[in-house]
Length: 112
Image 1 (cartoon, rainbow, N blue to C red):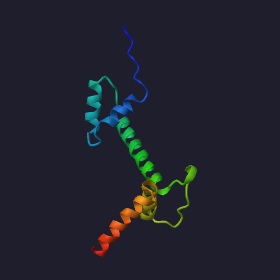
Image 2: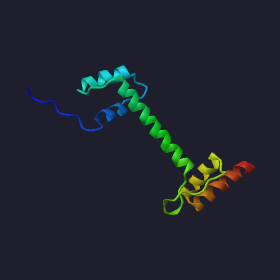
Image 3: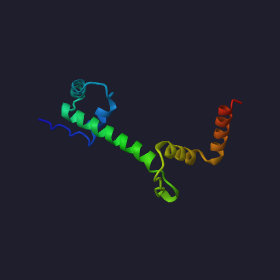
Image 4: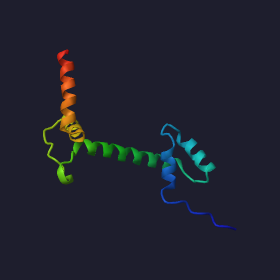
């Protein structure tokens, strides 16, 4: 009797993440079974939970830890979230483009 080929590391997680999060776990199990992958509903919940946590963690880190030169974190003590986001946007766009955008915004507020 031939041996079953062992699934590649991370194949189950990749399969679950490739499906819509709104798809019920039971349907994911059925879809996996058709592809020859053995899953449990508990594993599906675990994979989805971990994926959500890592997404939230990455988004939070990007906003709360803006990077300065050489990748060091800049001090943001006392800054609100909106101000940190604005600083990140300015750093990403560059000062020249930011000044152009601010001129348009200022003109809009002034009613010009």
